[in-house]
Image 1: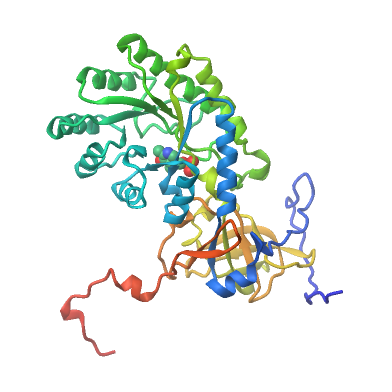
Image 2: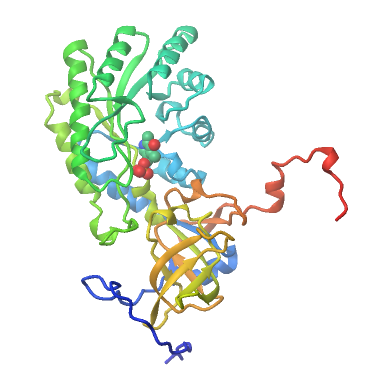
Length: 452
Ligand SMILES: *Cc1c(COP(=O)(O)O)cnc(C)c1O
């Protein structure tokens, strides 16, 4: 039998309120391998910390989501939400699976074009599309989701000047029973603004009104909100049919499905409470099916699911820097990845695990990142095993938003590695270096010399 590592005994203060109704959380199972590769060897080869993305998990999750919708509705199309994770390799996996691209800026639009997405399969969302962006998107036949009247007027103007027919939809916001309501994007349903915008587009006649769009929120736990949203969009589609004899080609239900991460303050873990893709699909497709739209006129159902498709595929691996006692005697563990890399630590109770088998002993700990910033907390109050300096850890479910919202702050951003379906790791984004960073800086000549 292998000798267990020595851990010094400790006397622990019992804090009231720690156990949930199921008692004190048991042992944290270690994560020793990712897709068959030992965590230790990934860190040895690619550095610490390092992001690791499982291609297998992306494909598996995508297929599960697609099947949930396609088994209930005849015409389904996913569009990958670039801002959720726009590393080219990640986008390419989704595009190989059949996803279109969903972008919210000129930069993201160019990124989708550059990796080879057909322009007609790019959905351009968001409140900030410049005239240059709109010109590009109109001339290439991309799908433009109009956010506000000023944008509508720009498009009317451009259609005239470019002598092209823009392919447009409007984004609609609405009361779905979830508060605060997301009413800053798109045209409101309840006050008639959305219907007004649709009528203007139809009367103008120089655009093709191809769809209706909504994105009701993010990390949505309520399937009913989607049923309500789908019902309201279907109602607009029926209105267009009644008044203008116009059949739209698609209804885009946006993204927002919760991933299985646990929100801060949640009583139960997200893995127990998040609705499944089947639950969301049932709510949305039954609203479509109940409509008066004739079977031939049923629109394509588009989904822009982001976090629920990628969170599980991402891991952050790294090393313990030190342990120390806080003034009140509580244990703190300092790790080498901070909130600059793990932005989602601000709202999730991330699942952080040891990378090797440890004893059952845990202690109420706070896990800090390496930044010289008091807010650099990766996990507050977690019953964590007694890892030592140099031990490795794995943070699960971090694939969404961290590789896009990360900051170059105090430390440089590390390698991102993708493990392919044969178990081979590839660097998909190289670690930043002082040189790569300095490429963007210019120092005026008079500041070129000093003596200190
Ligand atoms: C961010 C965003 C998405 C993806 O949202 P998730 O919550 O990650 O599923 C989809 N559509 C639009 C318009 C977005 O802004």
